[in-house]
Length: 263
Image (cartoon, rainbow, N blue to C red):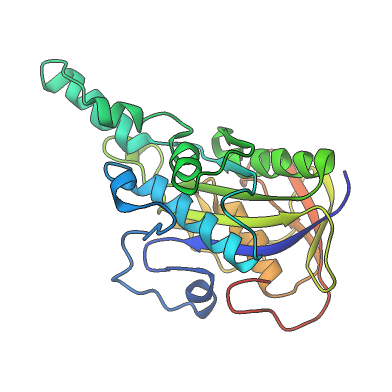
């Protein structure tokens, strides 16, 4: 596939409101809920923190790249999806006489965030939601990259998982994390570029200082790529979970001063 450029970044995690906060490395305890201002409060009512995480980072990446959220295609990725809503529905089914909330049910599907943002921004362009387990980041990046290779233009990739609720936290315990990348088919001057998608037996050594609680998220591999872009660190970056074959991409980065929230 052809090389693609990264025009903007987005990040949200408890304690870190955006990419700038992450770079500074000083968590803010007051950051507990993503604002997701691109969707009006009435439409956002009843939506999960997970959906708002995705909407928030889409907005951040779009603004950093000067893309219009009303028309840009979007690719969403997640391992767990709307897991908190689904667990709530299962509890209602077994503990509350089988009565389910229609509002919660409509927000339980895997592409709920895609629908929320698309409706909230009146965006009728392409959007899809990918579920690839712990390999959701690499699967979603491949989807976005293939879309750009086929039709050009721009696409926003957003990958996230919230914390798993009880009792699933015993099986999949990680902190909430959402990352987004505004990807461009035609690299503008000075923009970091991704190239060389390939499969290897072992990943390059980790360069980013990512806490285990975030690295375990399906969006965790995105932090390695995000860190390389922010640091203007050229070279191979692994975007797969720790076990199994590793997908590696090459980051080509002109040495220029990065912007505070973009690249």
